[in-house]
Image (cartoon, rainbow, N blue to C red):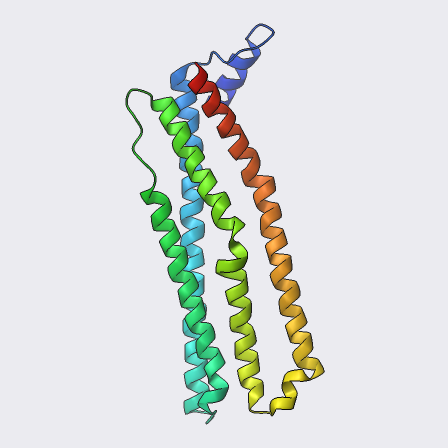
Length: 212
C-alpha cells in the first residue's frame, strides 16, 4: 500500500466530523516524497533551461562570426545577433542563480518537529517558485523579445532607415508583442492551475500542524 493509500484509508476511517489523526511517520513520508519529486522536477527543468539558453547563445555567436568572416557582413548588421547572445547568456546566468538561491534557502529539517519542519520547507519552496514565475515577464520574456527585435532591426538597418517602419518590420514587432503577452498569460495560468492549489494545501497542512 502506498503512502497515499494509507492517508486515504486513515481519513475515511475517521468518525464524522472527521479530524486529522494520521500517523506522523506516514505523513512525514508523504511530505518528503512530494518534496523530493517537486525538487527533482525543478532541478531537471532548470538544467534543461540553462543548457538551452547557452546553446542558443553560442549558435547566435557562431552565426554572427560566420556571416562576418565568410559573407563579409558589416558588424553593424551582426551587432543585434551578438546582443541577443549576451541576453541569452544573462538569462542562463539568472536561471542558475535562482536555482542556487532556491536550494540555499532550504534549511535542514528539525529533529524535534520533523513533520512541521518538512511541511514548512516544502511551503517555502513552493512560494519561491510562485514568486519567481510571477515575475517571468521581466526576467525572461521581455529581455528575450527585446533581444530578438534588436537582432532583426540591426539586420534591417543596412537596408535603410525606412525599413524600420515598413509593414514587415511592424508585423514582426506585432508578433513579438503577441508572443510575449501570450507567453506571460500562459505561464501565469499554469502557476494558478498547478502551483497555487499545492501552496494552499501546504498552508492548510502547516496551520493544522501548528494548532495541534
